Amino acid sequence: MAPNRRDQIRMAEDEISAFIEEQKNLQVACLDLDGSPHLSTLWFAILDGRLAFETYTSSQKIVNLRRDPRITVLLEDGVEYNRLRGVMIKGIATLVDDGDGLHRIARAIVARNQPDLDPGLLDAAATQLALKRTGVVVEPERVISWDHTRLG
Image (cartoon, rainbow, N blue to C red; front, side, top):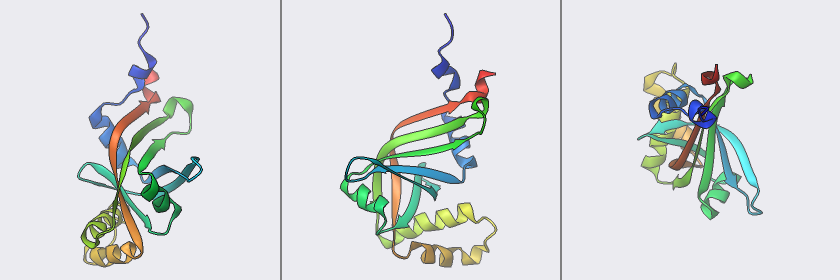
């Protein structure tokens, strides 16, 4: 019996973690009022093993997630079929409005995405980033991964 193709390309947990660490952008999908997907791409951080991002409180993403907290996020790379890799996480969005929690998310995003920033400026940059924003932590329910480089 031929090996299951899905089993061949699935990443192990440690490979998923390493892949996520390599990525810069997070594609975020939530549901608009009419049920259609609303997609955007954002910078993110990893906090306590969860993906987290922030966005303007008045953004369509936050409006949608307040109404329906279901969320799907995607991290992917590769431009040729045999090089495609990705991780899709389906879950529930936890919104973070409190000052300390939001600052923690913003600080992690700034630190991750601006590694050359003077550490003395990190808190000030996070405070600025958090203005008029809401944080989102993705509570995963299902993780799907693929790595086509395994197919040879």
